[in-house]
View 1: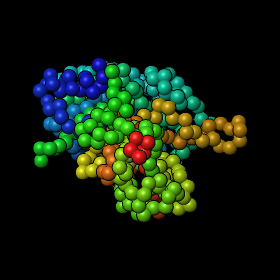
View 2: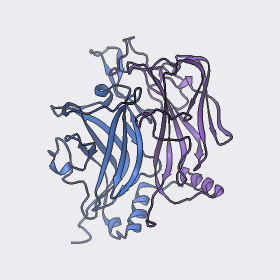
View 3: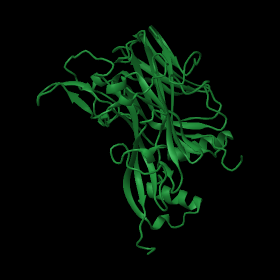
View 4: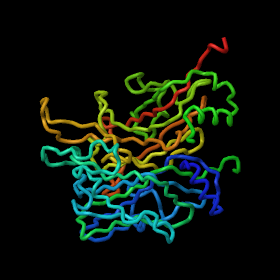
Length: 195
Length: 202
């Protein structure tokens, strides 16, 4: 089933509107000064974040909007704006919870850091490139963000709370910020001929 | 079966009553422009820009029976010398572009982030830089700043104005970053193109 078909199928099962502008949708959320912790929850706290740190105001989509998650993207920045390995190099797992259901469960993310060279996706061309140990700066980036392409279409329906949870044994996330983006196909509200 | 680019063009053309679009020349194309006015909009002032140094369009709408199915939206920086630069190399890894694509009076891409660190869809990134010399070790990446559209893309029909509305932020602090004339933001839209074909009409 295509992503378009799956989104339409789930929306119709839930009685959600199926009209709207079809588009590519990327949701993102930032956690400031995460420090060292064994658990991070993205898309849970929006207080104090600007439009450059999240593009949602609550942990659910609007009543006329829904999306299919195709890609998960994770990045960690220092307070000096340098991209660094997400959570250091320790093993971490990712879960996505939609409503009261876990739709991605304990997916390991560490293999998808560039230095590991064992990314799930065979298109991850740069996995495993090792630099000449030059110190990274904000404008000279020596690693890549974590990115995982999902094999199945995960639907976020309208008005249902969702959350991305990262778990580790004391991951070091630093004093800058960590960002999670969910990318995929979606529908956004369109008045069409009704206004 | 997934919808092909050509099918999508014809589907939308049919909805809009553009009955002759299917007789035109199918092609591959890209349009680009730079926000040299620092107005926060790209393409809307293309008619005033140098061609092809800054843009390759004379106005931000296609002529009769021409269209573009947008399949890739990409961002870059143009400096005062007219050089095209990588966004991350200028603004840094933590910069993020948040943009909308507006076609006619409809927002078709909504608050979409493009991260300086490379974002999302960096899988096939091969934009590497070396520290000089043919056998020099890799010293840094130049990430991609593109949105590859899921599905068949979004159609810009003939005779309808479009533009990209954007802001640049620091994702760590949340602060807005102002572009300058030395760091003007550019954008290209790439995809399946429909070109006017006179063969069947003249």
